[in-house]
Amino acid sequence: MGDMVLLSDVVAVSAEVAATSSRKAKTAAIAVLLRRLEPQEVAPATALLAGELPGGRAGVGWSTLSSLNVAPSREPRLTIGSVVETVDEVRAISGSGSAQRRAGALGGLLGEATGDEQSFLVRLFGGELRQGALEGVMVEAIAAAAEVRTEAVRRAFMLSGRLPATAEAALRGGEAALAEFRLELGRPIRPMLASPADTLDAALAELGECSVEHKLDGARIQVHRDGDEVRVYTRTLREITRNVAELVELVRGLDCRSVVLDGETLALDDAGRPRPFQETMARFGAQEQRAELLHPYFFDCLHLDGTDLLDRPLRDRLAALEQVAAGHRIPGVLTPPSEDAAAVFDDALARGHEGVVVKDLASPYAAGRRGKAWRKVKPEHTLDLVVLAAEWGHGRRRGYLSNLHLGARDPDGGPPIMVGKTFKGLTDELLAWQTEEFQQRSTGGDDWSVHLVPELVVEIELDGVQTSTRYPGGVALRFARVLRYRPDKDAAEADTIEAVREMLRGR
Image (cartoon, rainbow, N blue to C red; front, side):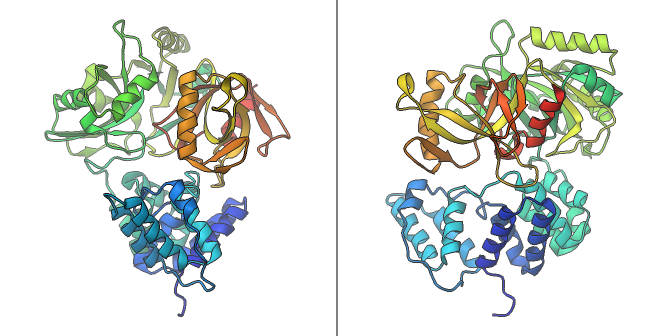
């Protein structure tokens, strides 16, 4: 068989990556395997290593997976190609009896797999291997395997939004192939993110020449227009064009031929104050026309009339935004004295918004990264954390999944790191929703708890953090309570353990 790469090789490297906390060791192990792959194996193997099914989800529920009990193969013989074929076959199954036929196809695949491979495949189909945090490690490993700069890989990934396609280009043609990825109208790019700052004054001192803008309690949108064709995407790059007719119409009316805008949208009440975040999100998934009208507030312009602006400083991008969409800009001021910045902050809060974002006017658009060029300032402490498990409630909450186990993202690509629990802030409506939702995302449990695929993000309000030996991250949340779930975010966008520890230093 020579040096042919089998699924067992991928499984071994995945286990090696999970077993070490060293980012360097993870990167090296993945890079060694990537170098051994045939060109057609690079994209699917990259997906597998990142814990994703090649080609995306296949609609297999946990009940189907847990019902499969197939004797394992003694010898590893599954190739990456045969796994891809079965995944494609399972994805194509629909109509009556589809669950049974999916189970049959999966059973056939598992019969060819060793015990270790079976365990890997079941966790893969169940979404358990999906670690958004691994993306950063994968980018570095692809760069090492292809002997190119990490920045070149990161930029191509930001523009394509697809790790497998990025790896394929890097290993096929190096930096020249990676440089071919361009901002394409109609293909969304990963949004640039802000990191928290303790105070407004600290953010102003750190960034120098900056803009201070309202931080809205809305949902992130990215809008692409090419001629009359308008497309609207969410923060996770899902297209919602058909659900937001008023945004499409508004952007079609702007005075330009082509544009890519980044911003927020939200539903407002009659007094012009933001409606609850859930009402804005409900529009994104609506099948029928709903009453709430969405108002866009744009804060960045990434392309205008044939010119890409990603690498231009923010001040140039804001000039382009003013030119094309002045009436729909987010409220804010440029390089203000601190008293003006404080007035913007107070105004944002008075209007029912979350706070402000302070942005470095010299910074390019670093898509997909939560860097230090954009700093968000809120009056209270909040963190976006991943739900790891939930405990069954007692008394009035008997029969409901209540106490949440919360994890912060590991920046080195490991599973989320537990930092606390909370059952506070949960309305009856949320309790009912999460009890049903969690059981659909369960990876097992016991009499008192249910463990989840680590993908749901919840926004937690807290009084601060304290050092703790109880949890592996060495910190614990103080007086944590649920603000809301964040269906617009995935685990890759949760706050890191470093962000939690910084709050400790901030105290």
